Length: 595
Image 1 (cartoon, rainbow, N blue to C red):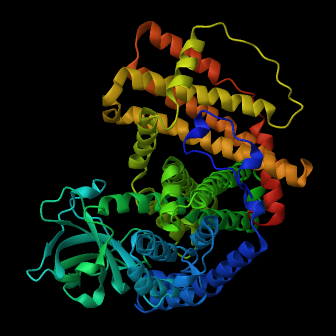
Image 2 (image 1 turned 180 degrees about the vertical axis):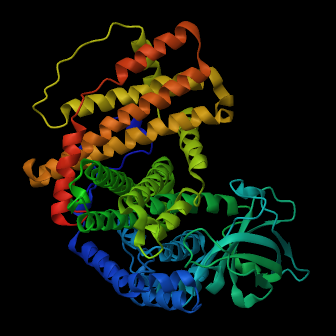
Image 3 (image 1 turned 90 degrees about the vertical axis):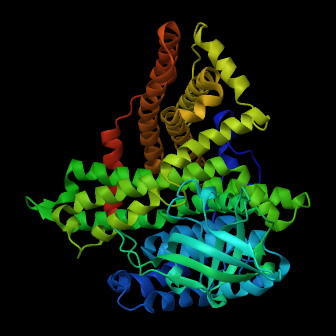
């Protein structure tokens, strides 16, 4: 596995060696066994009962499945052994989230408990709080939920109105307020609740047991998708919480929320992968069985193109998720080696790669939407039937672009975080941006590329794509200065450029490392997917950058930047039709997503 610790956001200004990233082929036997146990759990406990789960006619069904997940150790993957968990690595938790992604609405139940429900106590709790609550959460004895969102406070979480008032005897806080869209609320035993004390500017977090009293709920929400997950409004009416159940320090709640959401974002990125692969496999099987004009529909080029693109998007998403996950893990290890407390090291490790966490969330949730949409299309009329698996997958997928912060918010966050780090001197973006600006008015150099080396030409394209971001981002930052964050359209344009650079580079590096392990002949389909994705990324970056340039430049400056954009987005023209046919033929022969 990779051991080199990098800095978040540096992919935009530095080249990464393929040997310094982690790829799924490197998972250990132990990790694969855990993944298989998780898959077996889905196959036996969830898939056969998918309709019953979604109907929610038996309110005890999901809690029973949840308890079984706890018995298998799936709820305590990252909880240290001393608190009843398995104490496994960050990337192992990513792998389990990945597999659980195929579990439909139960993946929301799982993620809400193991992530935002458990991690605040693991990372911010006192030793007494950890000893009291983590063993119950790790084993599934108790279920947890996370109460942050309020009716008038969506993306602006810190504007919540729930109040915590200290009792006259100073022993308890009385919570009063309303929370909404609370996953697992219907059967949760423990609530992580965010409230404001007196006139505090920032939230404070509390650990609230259901048994404390003063908690009421509305009926289950009627949702478009993830119907089998419990989602309720929760009301706190003079709910008494012992003062020792304050989580971390007063007014530290917003920081807790932000840091836990960073973890949630990268886990959500991984958490859709299982679903993406399952939908792709179902589409392959159905397109083989479905006959039109006397042949299977997957013999048609239009269907092959869809199947290959679904696989390509999945392959790239896996690459960027596990690259980010291992970078986080490496950072955690480095901080712990320097003597930092393990809980703090985990938070700092994730915080260091918050940009990549946001990229993973946006990229993977949008890939999931794309794949399920194509899956419905391949099924045709049957895709619209509730009796076929695509209808449920289509509905369940849509929430992923909303929770853990909408994709629009995440796009603006990733660019905002990069600019703030640059201003603080944590990452040097401005000097490379100035160098690219000077390059625009210089005579272009024509270097000969040794195309005999795998991905040599593609890496040159990547270097130029990074110059696109530096050119447009640098000019926008100079022209707009502190008003740039008000120009949300430009921020989202820049985010799209960032995402495509990180995704395409991750795919190339994953494939290059895989080739070093298995040889080029064994990886011809992976090479094809990396090339297809890069080809698409160039076009997407061109469109996003051109739109941004037109938003804040005029005259000669605009002409120079457009000429630079044309220079920086030149790339080889691949025969993507033949590459997709090659990939699809292999998948059809295997009868599943095989990568």
